[in-house]
Image 1 (cartoon, rainbow, N blue to C red):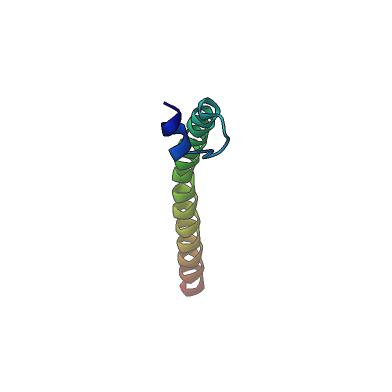
Image 2: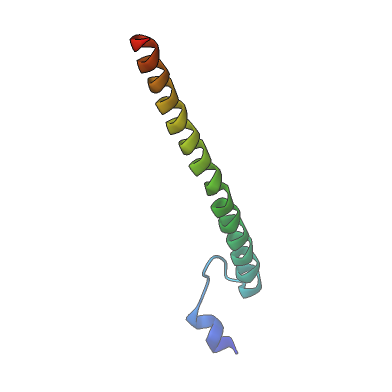
Length: 64
């Protein structure tokens, strides 16, 4: 059993149980970060749409 721990000695800490707990916490943080990336797409879509609408309004008010 101790041979297995020597192969993966101290990934984050020397205690393998603590390594496992920290690894699981890092996975949770990574999955939370991926969920928040969806809002960036909506903001970009809104910004592009607002820009196109403003330019369109400016062009139509110039010719009318």
